[in-house]
Image (tube, rainbow, N blue to C red; front, side, top):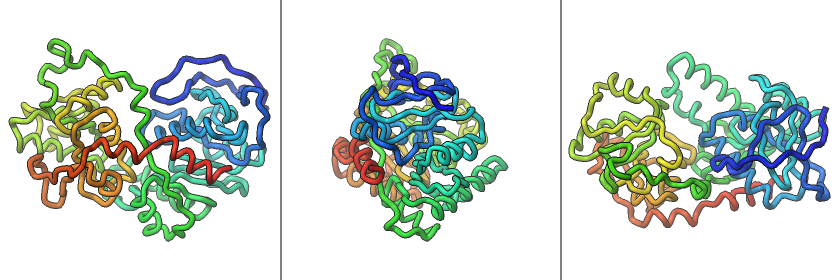
Length: 388
């Protein structure tokens, strides 16, 4: 059963974009006593239980901006019991069902049926059976379909199978599809024969970086990383996902021994470097996990931010780097990166450049020119046009 309750004001979470608190199963937060519109859509809020990465960031930031312009009560955000609870002025938060791995496929569809809502799913997953309810899917990319070679281990193959099932379901069941770039739209049309008229492009943005306070201690005295000096290192944020192309950065470091390469990410990066025969490069500084404040400082003071990705639906890290003041962003020369970054980035032709920072097409325009192109407020305005 839902009950109404006004929650206490929580501490602000600067990364999430909204205040959050732990929700109880009986909580529903209404819209401050304002006259409420009847909701048509309910948002799948499972992403509030997940670690914040690109797609969760998109959902969090767009909803925070949508809250500023939505009619009071016209949109619900449904979350499981125990999930961090966002605090909104106009969006209504409903807590329904227990937090477990079946919530999106069992409890959320049950709520849709009970309340008579359509679904808005913002993170590449929809309910496969929603009791006849239709909805809008935010479909970020088709990497699992376009690049199956990235997913060769058992866990990767299982994840790819699940996501390809989701892709087929979104193509078949969604009454509307949102994606983050024209490139991603073209990929959805190519692989799943979706009518382009069903797809709306609503991109990512960068304003969340303004809420992060740069860490002033990174370069104070010897600093946390004494080998790093302002303006004298290449910075990248890596993981072991194949599309992020971490080996390219290591090869670049090997080929430019006088340059310093700072790489943020967990300790498994060094294990992969050993497997590649590129361990113990003296000009590579493994930073481990960095705080948001440290990342902002490292971006602002790098020589260039490296992003040699093999596949993206949008690719937000270089945009975040520019927002922090990175003087250059160097990205792979792919259709997606060309669309998003245009003349404001330098381009790595991965077909011929297998690791050389001196063979990169330089930017033709200032990176900061990118910032006017992207806005979470504009993304929310465009999504509102589909919802209200």
